[in-house]
Image (cartoon, rainbow, N blue to C red; front, side, top):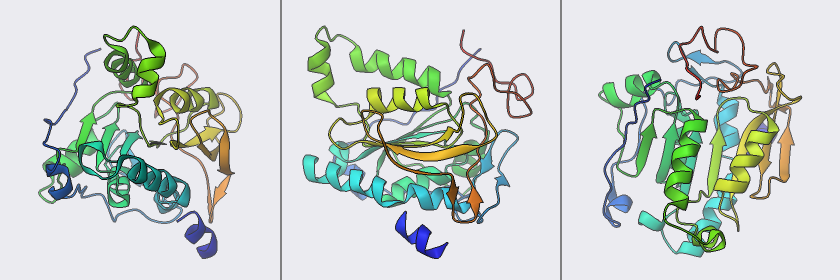
Length: 264
């Protein structure tokens, strides 16, 4: 396992932090969640009614070479960190552990989102050791509502689709999903939101469509092509909470038991 891990080494409220000058992003106090460091190998830990801290294998995978390659490419192409530095999308950020992993990797511009903000509030906002710098923005949104908002910002006022596609200002170098998704959703986010030259998406994808009991971890490029996959990471068999936005989601993690209201 050591060898493997070293190798892969409805009212919706939105919580947003203000913009920040370019040079401030390089000197900011780093992001920290009080949940960081609680993760354990092969075991999930309850962070709130709606959120688990994933097994440590998940965070080892986020730290894999595939995502580091995207970071290196972003730094080389844009020549620095700051406001033009590497950008990550953390989907299902929960208590912020995955956000801190991404931040420590070097992604200091992060959109973190989760339909439930309770774990983020507990470990990042309310805990005296937690801190969210201006380069990190939390959205209390599910991924479908976030995508709607992102599209509005991305295409607003642009008549020429190709021109906007080439602009790339709002595209992400890395996207990480922290809950199970169907392959069609992973490909949609990869093709639409990733940087076209080097972007990478990491997601636990259902082994069969709408089958929420087993996933395969996959890394995709911006065309939705799989570059790497694994059904097991070390001693952990890949299995995540289901995608609450899907009609086939059932059980305690899904509506109506968890209070989630699907977009109409």
